[in-house]
Amino acid sequence: MGRRQKQSRVEGRQEIIVLPPSKSIVARRLIIEAICGKEILSTDNIACDDTAILRDVLNSKISRFNIGQSGTAMRFLTAFLSYRGDGEEYILEGSRRLSERPIAPLVDSLRRLGADIEYIRCPEHLPIRIFGRRLHTATIEIDASESSQYVSALMLIAPIVEGGLRIRLRGCSSYPYVLLTGDVMARAGVGLSVDGDTISIPQCSYICSDYKVEADYSSAAFWFAYFALGDLESLKIGYFAPKSYQPDSRIVALIADFGVDAAYSDGIVTLSRKRNAEARLPRSVEYDLNATPDLVPTMAVLCCMLGVEFRFSGIGHLRLKESDRIEALVSELAKCGYRLCSDSDSLYWQGIRSTAVARPYINTYSDHRIAMAFALMAQKQPLKILNPEVVDKSYPTFWKDLELQVVRNSKENARKIRQ
Image (tube, rainbow, N blue to C red; front, side):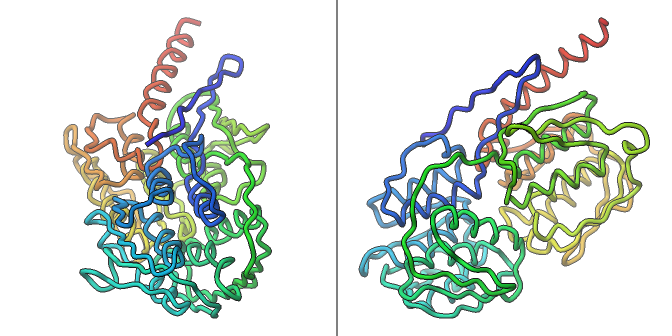
């Protein structure tokens, strides 16, 4: 799979960490480009497994697709293939974990538009058989409490539904991702309207135009936490839009509670340390992270390492991600000496420590966010991260970037000692 070869840029004496483009934005743009009939080439935006899988399926002439672990591809392709062709048959399948993740709310909604979709093995789960056909207007009420991508998948195909589409939300986790989808569609010429829990999208034509996709804030979160844990004077990360619709841009506000300032200029976010009283760590924090579930692993590890008690609520849908992230964090942080608790909707730590396992083996559960979060812990205590290549799903150059940064830190610390 062709991927972007990332180049670092040096500004003065400090190198900028250049992150992959936003996976969420790229995935939405790929669907729009495919609807426009545009061949999707190996561009700079194809920087990780998830977007490469999506591109390969959209370009493919075959009819059976294995999409691995990609939940984004599962939801977006189910909607896209439902209208593609006239009676053409497609089979969509994935990994064992992906086949455990729900898809029924999306399939039920598509069927109400006229889609012809069958479950092949287990009701409400992959693999599925799809027969492409024309879709017709309807008002869809959908329970998106499990995933906002049900809504985004419907939104992206709405302009090609005869008569357009009206979507009424009945519960929606990660609602800001719906707004992100709306922004990407608006940039492609769609005049949609969002009125509370109702989204109206007319039948129309997309206008495909190229624009630079900003960096991925979900991946950036690691570097915000890395900086908070270290003793660097500053750190530069790029490249971002002046106003970002990415929900995980909330990391800028969250990290401020941990004594870190983030200043934006010309696409670069520069991290620096607050001074005096502003730099004091809180004893405890409480966050509703329903809209930003990808931040939970990083924030949980950060809080534990800094001794900050926490409660993260609104995150029950984390159990349906690449892994059961709540259970994964409880289990793996216990190996590191932190006793976390959870309930159906929350994860919390009350400062209780236990004896850490000597050089524990950290199970990543094939989950890229778990691997990156525990890379933070590895900066302070010896451990081994199993299956580290899972980061390819969103950030293929992660380990290389981290190694380079650790080397730079060592050189910087040595320079300070010599002064």
